[in-house]
Amino acid sequence: MLTLGIESSCDETAAAVVDETGLIHSDVVRSQVALHAPYGGIVPELASRDHVRGITIVIREALSRAGVGFEALQGIAVTARPGLSGALLVGVQVAKGVAWARGLPIVAVDHLVGHLLAVFLRRTGANTTAAENANTSSDGGSGGPATTPEYPFVALLASGGHTAIYRVNGPSIDAIHELGATRDDAAGEAFDKVAKIIGLGYPGGPLVDRLAAKGDADRFPIPPPMARRDSLEFSFSGVKSFVARHVAEHGKPTSDAARADLCAGFQRTVVGSLVNKTVRAARAEGVTNVVLAGGVAANRELRRRAAEACATAGLALHVPPMASCTDNAAMIAYAGALRLCRGERDDLSFATATRTALARVTRKGGGRRAAPR
Ligand code: KG4
Ligand code: ZN
Image 1 (cartoon, helix red, strand yellow):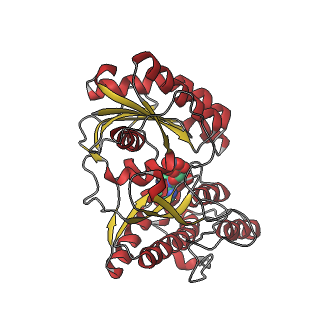
Image 2 (cartoon, helix red, strand yellow):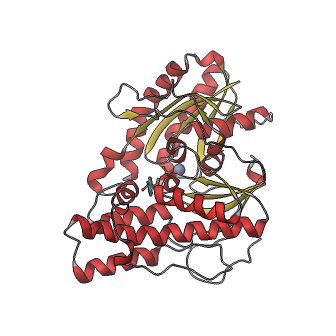
Image 3 (cartoon, helix red, strand yellow):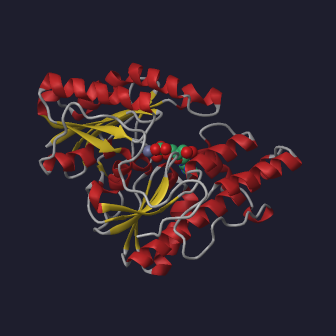
């Protein structure tokens, strides 16, 4: 029961072949980081054009690594939302074309659902090594998380575009409930913006992570945002502004040590907020399983502090390997495979959308908040 997954929602062009148990038969990711780096952020039109260039390359590569042709597939799963509209259209049009030409069923997948289910993926290593195209990379790591969670679980999803805590009762969209989200910047967005302010480059998350490991967080202590005990909402723009004000007053840090200290102070505050609220959410929901998801879940301090906090609180933490946290098509294929197994199919006329289909409780910006569930 093999499903081909296709992902083009942001700045990775990806294809993967996965079965309904979560076993990855191939996982190919073609990153656009080098393309966008000179601009210090993602340029949507460049992203769409590069998806056009890369999409058939990654699909061919994914089938070849899995050692199968289209005839072996049970169906096609493609990211239809949320994301950049031009970028999403590339993957969706190609997926529809293949589905129509090969007479295969197709299912649209919400990218956030993919991230939330990525913890169930299992990597064998053999078929997920780097592709030949110099621009194309994929994970060579093997194994999955040491343990997989049981439903229901609480998940922290922190990426470049989204940051929220969810209660996940099951693998379908109506079984996933947002408990609180960011009112302004996503956590990954804050990492990227702070890296830019300090002059580190793009994308900022991994660079800040590396520098912070060598820094002294006490040199630039940054107050925690939204520390109100009962709120499961996040806010990261104040933390980012704190760094921006510091740089405006004192100039960009000129030594490696000063850069590392500033990164350490910023990262400690952001990670503290993510970890505290996630643990509080798990307690409030009465669940014992906690999952990390999204690109920021690759952050080493987040992984370490979440492990400590969960151990103290008697919660079981499940953390996917790095390659399952950052954008990939394997998580899309798996989420789609589960829909296909339930007998669900989408009509070839389905549309893309820039917003998630998951119901939200947090509104961005100021104003009165809806009462949490
Ligand atoms: O999930 P993802 O690959 O794409 C989105 O759906 O947004 O997440 C990308 C985000 C970027 O903002 C990147 O800077 C951040 O994840 N990120 C990290 C780390 N690795 C990636 N942030 C902090 N520490 C990291 N090690
Ligand atoms: Zn993502």
